[in-house]
Length: 378
Image 1 (cartoon, rainbow, N blue to C red):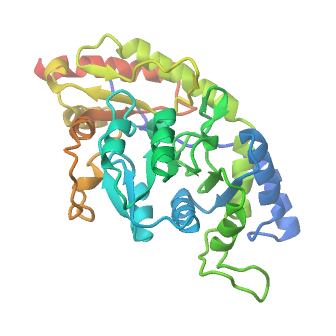
Image 2 (cartoon, rainbow, N blue to C red):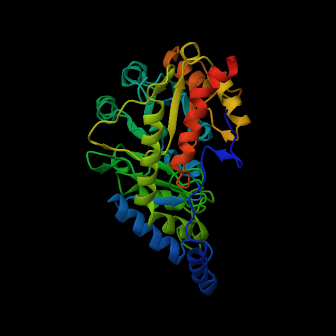
Image 3 (spheres, rainbow, N blue to C red):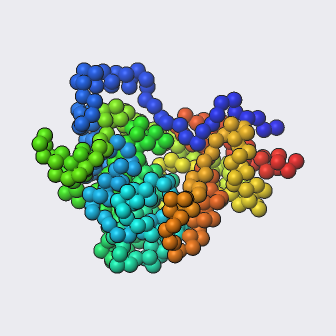
């Protein structure tokens, strides 16, 4: 008999440093009375992040959405941008806020990232950039997308919200493309409560991004461009700094949980797992997505989603519905039939995975998934 968990198991739960340690860090804020506007903690945190990523070309923000909006603004992207319909809404919202028209094309079926062939076919003289997403932290087809961008002389921008800690060929994903945006939201494997980061190839953009996130101020009396308020504060920086000291251990724990799920579910009929990653990819295991084939599994994705709730297991349908089906984007003409994206969106389920989750809890969730179709028909 399947027994529900006594307490809810959510799809994610933020890692927190030791309470006493964080309180000790707060003393610095109380002593300096410096809460925001490039305080000492933010400056120190920025340096540590730059060292971790092996690049000085980074800029920190209040959140990832503002980071992407400002990245597009600062690079003067306009016209049309080829992007994915299978992502979080903020990706496309950032285009909308910059009056850029999204051109949605399909994804590839293995790792759910932009299909380079579809991207190539969609390029027109109006195309200014490609905005690809490392969905679930899965690296995009980096070489193929770079070749397309170079061929057509357009910018290559990555939404790397899920991909902190991911490396390809030993190189952090932050160093691919012209610009990458990272989200440090509390739901992410790596977080600073809220927060975001831009990593960019051309160091000349740093000054522009700094202006844009701080009202356009150059100094006390000069405002050089119409910026906004998107600065990261000292409390966020303190959390980010402390979580950074544990990031390798956090990723190692996620890897254990991820592989436990794979071992428990790989032979279950109707459950499709992401294929193994190439040897040159250092993955962060931040998400545990599975696709549900209703006929083979004996239950469709939405039914499994609802049934698991009864047992105190709260999964997420990342990402459903497709962005093209949302009321705010339905009016945008889409030439690509988005065959793969529609199939994945209707069948994908993200299972709980976070640092405090135990092996025993993973085993129980997997047992529920194996048993529920039979239990439902009994």
